[in-house]
Image (tube, rainbow, N blue to C red; front, side, top):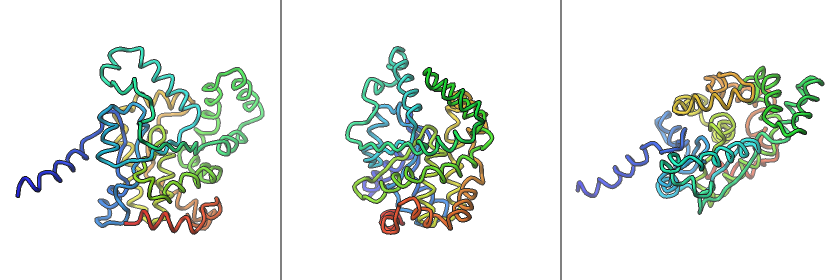
Length: 302
């Protein structure tokens, strides 16, 4: 009898083991259900993490074989992709790094995975930030972009718009300006063949948090459970806090952008209710129709 029961326990223990090079990873359904003490969200279907670019060969195998992930949804910007490519190229010139992670010589995209790239903070979001700048700063930004100084240009937005808005204000801006991108992301959850889906941005907390929150709002998950899942990211990202702070500071933001405000989920909920009448009404407005919402709910409800 002991041998019959050992395999499931071993599998669960393996799943609980941290990844080598993927931070902030979790099964959202499992996290929500554990908080609630009952099954409210389907498990093994929606996952979240920080960027998996440096996943080791073991990490890649585990994503596919242990967690059954078939689709990776990448919410990052063009600039973030370019910066990550530069970092990877630099790492390939350091023998000790290659020795510690032989997957760096492999393609970034994991063979056998479907990739869905949704720049959730795309053109609409950029325009919404741009028009909050003074005329002088707009001129400076355009000049820097034309000269190829993209990061310096972004830092103007960081210091003058993003920092004053804060994580909560930027969450509002994303909801208001990124409807088409959010709808595109949500549609991925309407096809059973896409599951399991791993959603990530850079840190896996804010843009990822917004997309995951929209799914959970539609599933009518209690705010307390959603908040518990969201704030987990702050602890899960601690191993790379210093390097992530450098990235944050490079675009003119302060260290509080590495945090997870405890009222972030509640504030997004209040914004959706106050401005749109709720998450379902918001989804109708952005083109994610009631029929699609019903399919998503049916596939992801516990």
